[in-house]
Image (cartoon, rainbow, N blue to C red; front, side):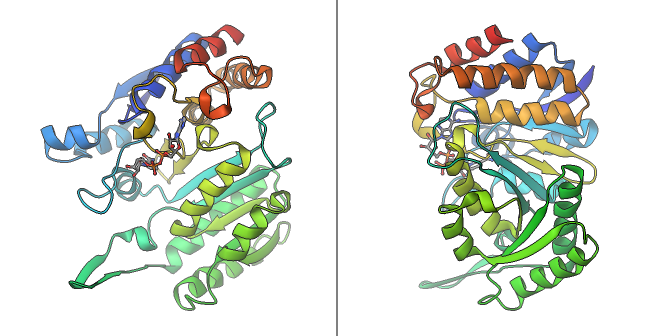
Length: 331
Ligand code: NAI
């Protein structure tokens, strides 16, 4: 039995968490959940949206499954997600984007893995109001973080039989910061001659992704571009409801969907739990429960391929509960 920290989050978080834990239980996953709440409600009662107990739990269990947590926009507390990634030094954000049979999209043969730097860039949160009409935000890029994220991308490519790593930047404009990122990427690339290495500017990448996404394999990006391009790539394969993710560090890993807390559909029993479920499947593989992971994955893909019971974001009319039951039935 493995203990795993579970953060049900808020918004649609608790609904999709309920769905996913039910599926894992039915599949026979050997997990003992250490449930840790975080977010706005917790901030009211405990004074912080991310109390130390959450971090302590993950430090102990070394692995967590996390549903989305709302971040106030333009005011209020700093993002729980950013704080979590920083305090556990979860420096690599891994987001595989692959077409799933049965989900109609404009593109075929999309099989891209995004490796996003997770600890610095504009997300360092160094901002100040200079005067009433001017604010500044500082972009931090370091040799250490750039080198280790590019190394992660190449190591991932080797372990997963990938052929090409593309480093993404805006080094024509941010000559020093993105320039340093590219310099590190070139240095690392030299150590992996068996993997092809390319570079692309982020604006060009966005255009190419919506024209010929099949040309890309592993993308490695600084934090902000990685965040934006991840959502774009989620769109290529059918939307945020099916986009999984993982935050990986040396000592811990937190598995979570790309999407947010979707306040617009909260409590309506129509959220798609697939992205959290796919994140949970990766988590099961990470803790070596591969058979259970494969069993769930098979049932999930069968459910989607049959197209009989799908949530509204995938053009179906099933509720979260009906979709969950269908996956369990298919298992
Ligand atoms: P969002 O991802 O929550 O929603 C964008 C759109 O996608 C909405 O129309 C929503 O209904 C839909 N959507 C998202 N997930 C879905 C699902 N599983 N099933 C069906 N439809 C789904 O992004 P938004 O609205 O920008 O952010 C809402 C809140 O979430 C913000 O406070 C944001 O900071 C937070 N957020 C949290 C993240 C995390 O916890 N890792 C990641 C991204 C955003």
